Image (cartoon, rainbow, N blue to C red; front, side, top):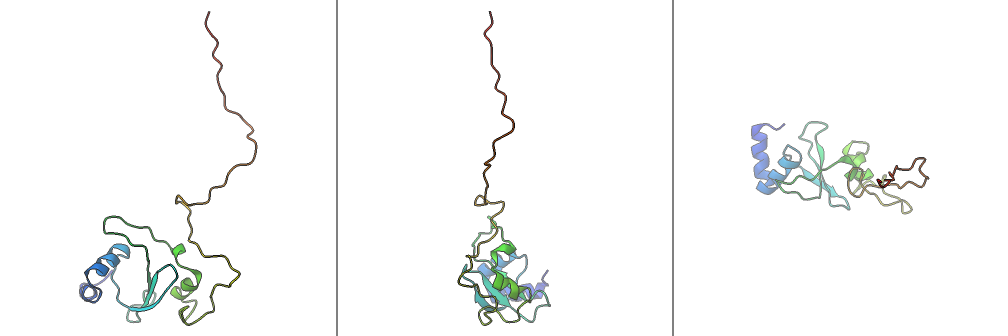
Length: 140
C-alpha cells in the first residue's frame, strides 16, 4: 500500500485519469520510466526508487472503466517481457534480443481457459449407454 505523501505525489505526476486507472487496476499508484511497449500495447515501467520486487511493473493495454473491471492475468505478458519483469533478464527486450521469438515459432496468445474463446474438445467415441425413452401404451 502507498503512504499518503507518495499517493498525493503520484496524483500530481500521473494526472487524475491515469491515477484512477492505476488505483482501480493495481490498487496502488506508481510513477516510473517507460521502458517499452509490447506488440499488444502493454506498457512496461521501471523505477529504482521503489522497493526491490516492486520496481518493475506492467500496465495492461485493455481499457476498462471505473465501473466495469477487466480481468488481467500473467498469461497476457509475452515471454520476453515476463523474463524482464521477474529479473531473469537484466536488460529489457527492447535492447536485449535473447528472448526474441524465432521466425519459425508460433504466435503468442494468452491463456483463454475459462473464457468463451477457450478450446473445447469434442467426443468421438460411441457412448456405452443410451438414454432411456419410455414407451407409453394406450389404456384399454
